[in-house]
Image (cartoon, rainbow, N blue to C red; front, side, top):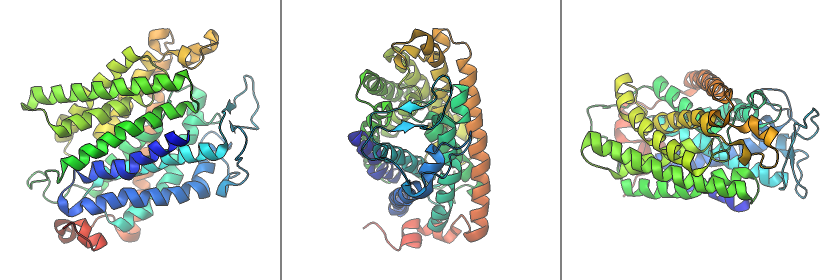
Length: 416
């Protein structure tokens, strides 16, 4: 778990930082990397102070209580039981073999990457002060409540029986929708559709994507919270889905645009990784082929044809890859989930973790309901927070500052 925690943190710094920086223009590279780096620091402190308690304190259906504020009372030398103190039949608690300090750190890295992903949608145009003022309350009031609802035994979406092994709804749909709302509120970049907005350095982006791919093994396999067969299967299907997403995106691009691109390859890999995230602890390799393949094609369409048709400027396709990929993965989990992976020794209990293909006709509807709940809550809450920050300091830099570049205007620095 310590290694998995380090791998997931590596996904943000430097993974997302490099991935996003390589896809923006030269005048915004440092500002883009600074967003990921500084957000990691902000969310680490926010998570310790209150975010963890809101997400994983017992509390109610929507919010955890404040019993773990400032990490009050968390254990460091005994196995952690999620939901300890809750009663019911069957026992609603989730036992682990790791100390709560390790669980806290692992979940912190999820909170960090979710926050960092949002800003790909508004690259080149958001004030750094607005980034800071927005992301702290967003993490506390959007990320943590959704994490509680989905992953805590007291949570409402958990009670529905929805399956999200490693964050398809909590991380990817949540961040993707927040990014889309932010891009709509801020508006299009100056010169969008007319100026040359080619990526500055796709080499950086490919290095970032490679770090994301490797880090995702910690993201998904680590979510088993144990070194066991389920973790091994999660790692295997993660590799398969990433590879298949790469292939289908590239082939779709080749067929429609005439040439395969490096940008397409890394986008397809991330699409496959996003889609397998909710399914990774519930599906076998054959299903991973389908999930990754479908995600590659659908996310390619969402990031090209759909974005063009609707006319929004999601700069680095945070919604097209993470939002849409998360939706694809969550829905397909409702079809391909094999309950035996969750409950190998209890065939009766395994039914509750099975999808349509394994006889649970309710699971697809449950997954759709969890997607809709995440979409609506994230979109509405994000919109409200953005409007509050806009009234306080303004969200967007001036046209002159945007043309000069955020590196200089926001940070007083530039690449040589």
